[in-house]
Length: 114
Length: 321
Image 1 (tube, each protein chain N blue to C red):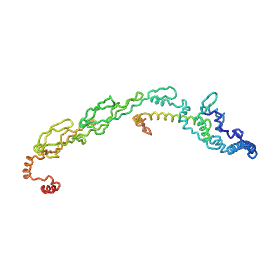
Image 2 (image 1 turned 135 degrees about the vertical axis):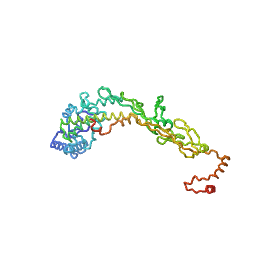
Image 3 (image 1 turned 90 degrees about the horizontal axis):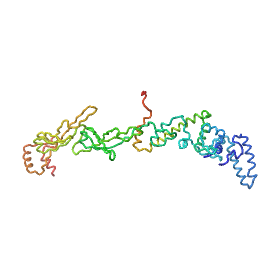
Image 4 (image 1 turned 60 degrees about the vertical axis):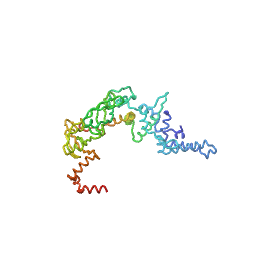
């Protein structure tokens, strides 16, 4: 966990004003403790991600909101999938087999079932 | 945390190349080892200033430093890949708010007895059928042929009378709806899948819908004919042995094979009885004496079709020598 000063020293490409705007936009969600921002590993990684997206894809602030929104949805689905897989993993073998058998084939139903 | 190269040179992070160059020259002169002999602190400062300038005087290195890709010494920094963080426990912080309904999945987890994640939603109507359970059941030959009920232990203290259809095949699987594991969330129970094996029988043998049996008969029954009891899958019946029957004679008991109904269509097999004549009197002097006299009057060669020669005496001698 590091504070705002240490973060801006770490990433000279972003200053306090800009980071504060990111926090206000809810792009980065550090903990607030005793009037100080505290950035966890995930927040530091996210700052680096935002810098990288901005640099590599010349993404401006408005497009950044969209990109982050889509990424958050994607990771949300991946986290849920992982939870589901973990839940299935600790089932007895016959339950796992039943789930495997109940999985519809990839590609879905034939056309014309409408 | 070590000083940043900007701090070492005493310039702002947005300093121009010219400002950086001026700051470096000033500090380099001030701490140059030749001008400060015997002062290790000055030498250390000089090294730090040189290292900071190495990064900031090179636009590419400066940009990489600004992005956090290299550290103050110019060494590569470990990258903060976002994905492992996003997919880890900390990632929940960035759960989209109200943009996507993940409640359905949470309901699923609630069903598995796990915490439902955010919010207090409870499962609403997620149902899943229970798992199928597998069993094997061995039935004896007559039951497999005629059909009937056989008791199966599903678990200690839980019994099931399984209806075996007539003419069930070896390794056929019966599916008993609803006799598997309990369903989830009010879903229906699974099925019991019972693989049926037919125990081998000492004299019955099955070929399709027909049953074959080898029937021992005495010499007298074979020669004179007789009515004898024959076992069938449904119990013994009486069969007529025609006078003068031989070993290998095959007789048919019509309709005593397997009765099957398939999709309303009934098939009925037969039982085939193959006779096996048992002399059963080795060393019987009376029979030997009679046969000796009888054979002299009725010379026969049962092996003629095999082309093994017409002289039984010669064959006996050859075999004895």
